[in-house]
Image (cartoon, rainbow, N blue to C red; front, side):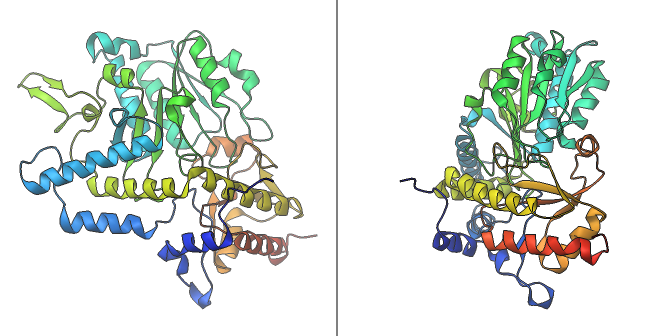
Length: 430
């Protein structure tokens, strides 16, 4: 007998009760159906309580005071680092706090740029990117994992190349051997598309990078909240992810880096709190991860993030994934029966997340979103910060449902019923 990992209806009801916002009523008394977790997730009460407790009882600047509050704040901050690092299978020394996934990738590209400018001395030379080198991304990237690499290529004179996506929205791995060559120094790719939900074949991509000695950088912002994640086991060199998509607060995220790489990488940003000795002419820097954390850190959000991963860990990420997979199957099956609705990306639930974008024939995505909003259903519309991917799929904008652990089958059915009315409402149905 197969035992389902997904929470029972009673367990799901208890989970939903942990999120105060899900009890909100919108105009007209409609209950909120929140299907925009890919943009930002909702927060359980435990996260808000942890941040409130820190603010009320322990707030102080970290790593710089000798008083009691400073010690408590520093301990809480470093305990948070350890908890979040462990959540993704890493050690505390391999997690750099940043402002988010975008901040993490910008920090990394700034550090690689510094190495390319000759900073970092002997150890840093291994990261130098020179004119004629190649930086590889993919056509599926969120702008956060595309534009910083464009800028680094422009700064260093490197060539920017990319893997294409096929008609099903999946990366064309048959291009790996032609796109990744001996000049490739970096291969940056998403773990899962925020538009199509397609999960990348990390093993095949990292193997291709290793054959030419290229660094691998994984954008895990979309998978960290939804799948069990062990970054060292995936074999990537660096990875970025955000708290606010993992039931945590805005303003904090993480850059994972293999310990030996962080040890050799020069800092991308400089200032207070990341130095050892400073003279009027130069400075020496602390070991990682502090070397990469210039200035005052987002301490309270980090405390909230640790509470969020504690909540997810208590639920079990395998159970979270099983629940969301079941909802995704139900959603895709329902969409397949709607005339004039095209799913962007894989039409089945294998190797994909519950981020499901659709193009509704004859109706602009913004109109679709407004119609759904009038029913109390919150979705995202537009290009989702992935313009090249939308162009590759032949559309300018789409309507995206992104599921979370707190969504229900009844909400999926409500969305499908509302979407079925859209073309008729706007006069686009035959």
